[in-house]
Image 1: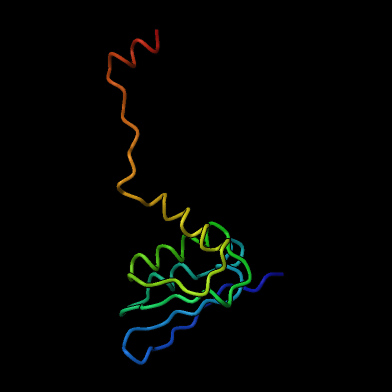
Image 2: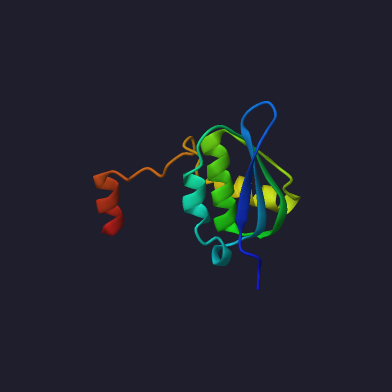
Length: 112
């Protein structure tokens, strides 16, 4: 069985904090991690992933969202984790073009 995902919060000397993750950041093992991450207060400077065993898209989204919300730097991630976090972050890109709704005339002609 995979280790349950968890994190610790450590104060950094210059202020702010470091969030250090451990275990498996996957849908089957995140339990209450989402609620606990949303409850974080104060500045978070870094998110350390060097202690995780595995990450899936759910875990990547939690990391991405936490880093985005706290303007934190993600450190200690392997190349696969970095790619996955960047990929889920791309889905949150507000500058990405949104599909345009066809005009009524175009829709009508396509239906005929």
